[in-house]
Image 1 (tube, rainbow over the protein chains, first blue to last red):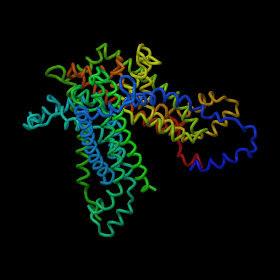
Image 2 (tube, one colour):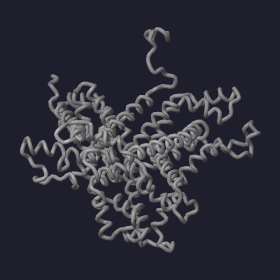
Image 3 (cartoon, rainbow over the protein chains, first blue to last red):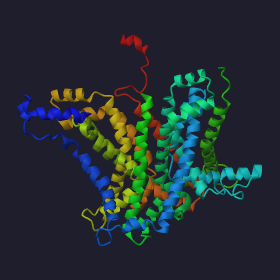
Length: 303
Length: 275
């Protein structure tokens, strides 16, 4: 849009009365130079360095070997573990968050309930990392309060029945503590955007609640839900501190493998580490980009 | 249609609320059990009496504050300048400010270690001061998406073009305009972004650990391996801290420039004074 307007004006330039500006270079961009310099040195540069390194061997010659080495069994296994964990925790977060938002916003509950959940979600979605792992160990660990209570009061032995906090499923339950509130926060505006008229029209035409959601509500929300799911996926994929505090360094999700690689070069090849970093950035980039595309698609309904 | 009692929504909300609250209660209760046979704040006392806790939390607090300061100095003039003079660059600047959401911290710090390592053109990691600087700048990068959005929202509600013209016609230089006119007007927005930055960087683990700095995050992890009750106490304190940061962030984000902290005591209905 702005380009179309700006182009003809540039052609008219010489005939403009302000001849003093003529021939001068526009120095306005200099004002943003410090920002670009900073971003280049401490954000883009380091990432480009890794990307470049991913396509070089230890002597600095161009090669695809590192990318091919990503196909080795242990690396495929860690990507697969990361992706499965992120998918499961994103799915759990998306479904639970959507149900909660639907109940709180459209379920006819008093307004303060929504306010309370919104405030709490703002905090909980930022309560990740090491303290979150501690909280779950104190709750559902082998000596955690809930584990002990269930055993002493109800005679249910969680760990004997197959539950383990320090497992794939346990970890996704921990992730749920920040995924659910995040979903709640980002899906809420979309539920507000469901017009009352649609629901009324459906009811007048004799639709049941189920039909309304199946044929109108969910299809309208689908791009938003999918977008939010991808955001949650990326959110889980990049998580390191929570896993590390809970599982130590033995649980081989991709960030942990990279962390170990930086610490002590466990892959015996720094350039393979670069390829690993590249893989992470690509996955995060793709899911975030798709999220943005889906979000702009979903906003069609809000006009 | 007759409104019936919303059974399913109430149950859903209760279930979610208990999922959120039970871990907090359990952790709090657990943190009180350090002394055998009685409930008390022994774990908290033990945390506060630990010299390592005090040094690491001081280090992380200073690092976070410096990061907030540098972030504000970089982002406020940039957001201001983009809005005022080069709106065409806005998508680019916005895109860059969102990039840290795509680059995981572990990748970022990997890049730092390699790019600023011992045999690079700018060997920052070879000195303590250089590594401290990298850590702080890393926090600036990690908080950039939030800081930029907060400041940009703050700039949206004030008329920067008019303010700038007014300052210029009074003879203020560019730098003076930014320092004495724009900064004070987006102060609330900066502080709002600052609290989020603070809550992110105070307990940050990955950067601090891989840059080998004596920060609070690595101390937390170590404590989690060595002790049982102190981590629970710290988790509760950390939740309270995050809560405080988020509340203060909200307060400052919704505060208009020049707005009073408390309504005037002799307040009259607003309509009458404006009419």
